Length: 353
Image (cartoon, rainbow, N blue to C red):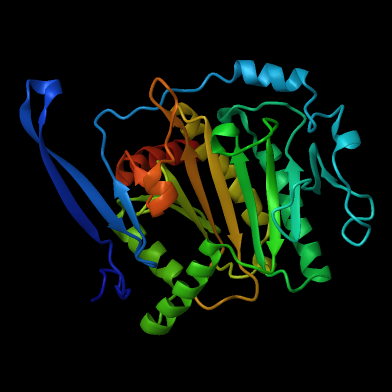
């Protein structure tokens, strides 16, 4: 099967629909047929459930109290404390103990996730709403993270699984309000890294085309979940999302950390500013981000970013992470990816006009 652009179609955007019928007490006990979509990831076959909710809106969180409390308690990342209470690297990693660029400071994670685990404080500001992050804040932090990972490649070439990660605010797993990202290098892949590398290699062998190249071409052609692109990165919404919003950025012609250029970092941070502003305006109070950075150009792999919006739901602040996510490993999404992509696409067009 061939697409209009001549690209082979080795995968498909598979959807299975389930329907439950019941009598609705909200509408005079009239019968209703409620639909659920089960969407399959074109690469791995993993499924996500789409439960469309009419008029779905997120209630913006009020962080004023927690911001004031954490500032008064002596935030370890604020400028008056960061030099005294954050750890230092051994000289082989960083002779000065910490790395700095602008207001960004990189230091060891006091509670490391692996062999090489660092924290990058992004700014002097204790709290930054999503719509107030600047390109400079983000760029300084991400450039430090890449610099750190390059250092680790020299001193520990066995740590080949690299990523730059972000938990923004407690709803997304952040233990500190002060904006910070994290860099991780380990000899052991995460489940996601292992599964993606294995599936990408098999995809390339079977179909003769790299999955990420196919995905860019096909999403661009379909223009259903396509958001924006530049000469360095292409943005789209995941077909089978891992959260309420799941934005994927594919780094063009980047299959190794060595291929990451300053031009790519600058564009990434410019685009992140647009995405963060959109999430803020949609009422989301948190996010998780992971930038997966391959080493050694694994067959079929590409560096890529995933950003998932995080929130609590309803009047009692219900966690969106329920039994399906936790014990069935089945993400649930309440808004159609195509709708989100269309809204975000307009934001990018306005920003670039």
